[in-house]
Image (tube, rainbow, N blue to C red; front, top):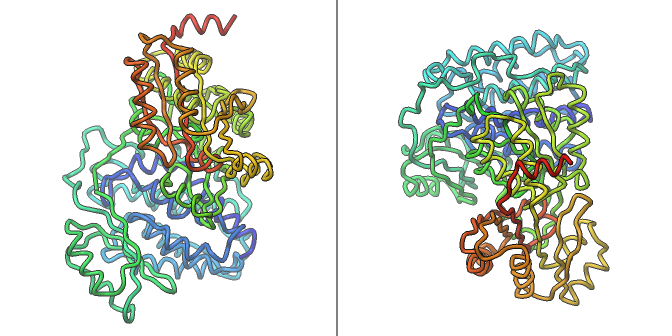
Length: 581
């Protein structure tokens, strides 16, 4: 594929990923389960590998497709990935549009299918170079198509929003076309383009849609593929069928998993199966009166569930597991550590500067005031990136940034405490002061099991890693503003726990009630039952929370790692005065 085309696909994905929280927030069709943005972010993540692994991307696209929106989008984009140059895109878009429509057994107006229809109609003849395309005409048509979707279906009309999948594709294609034609339109705020259609009406409620299961199954058919849709079990709804050279991927909703499985097995060998309960999870916009909206990096041990409950925007990096790229917040930790233990190559990659810029734009477009608790500048370039962007794009000073100097659990415990404080605070300045005080008072110790994973990622020399494991050395590190400091070396897990308990005994009395965040990798049971039990016995009033170690950290530190972060009770006002002086 022409490098200009591949970079345009990556550009489109990155912009859509940056706005994915908004897609989840307005997702009401076909089920109000707040996952359209999540599903598109997972399903189209293989596009990020077009530069590094172009031959594997089409198969990974079908394999990773999840949810209704993700499977439809995968069917469409699969056809586009065969182009070699931009002039072939109009024909590929026509094929992709037909393939996406064929994938859906009951296509509806006002969805991403309608956007694909509009794109196919308005694209120029195949003999024109991108610089000659009528960019404004194409974008205006797509924008109108999305705006009109709010009237196309009863669910969307009653909720007062545009279709989330349609909006996701508009965001993608505006960035794609901006890049390939040399325009700068992708700097526009989505909130300004669809005013009044990006917040669910206060009096709207889902109409009993919850229940049943969302199933993704992969089948290796026994015979021909023609007519397979007509043979699907009657218990299936919201059916999307896509295929590649070997298998057929089926996404659907069902109340009867047993009957569905039996029906699919009659069509061929079921080689893949995943399911999750359909639960209504409408994410309406946070109250406008909140003092400040928090944003942080997923390098802190914050889960997507924390983000939903506390109203936090998470900025994630990417995991590359084998040849597949995944947003780190949307990958299961068990899968990561199983892959690492099995010898699969795992690495991490930061979101591009463009994606980070779009994330900042999304945040200040959606919220009046935003506080970004940034991972320590010594660990990534995020602080420099955001401060540079802010200087050029935040004239009204809506985005405040704090370089926390922290990562993993220390960043996590600071963000969790600040988010809870912010729920009741009325003054943004007070939230900032509290956050700075929490950074000053927090502490963390991370206990590594093996050095070989740090060596594999280049964090230490391979020779040092080999001899460290050979001698059964287990380092203890603490993330500081100047970097990760090595504060001890032990031989086994018992000595790790003894070290942790020694720190607890040195910093607290038995009457103290600190917040403690215990992080696990593939050792959750031991952390929850053994480590937490002994810590709680020493500090009966402590509030102990459990979280998976951030996968950014886990990908480098490996299985067996665990961590302890803590934050004592403190007077934030007095601490703020001390810090200022």
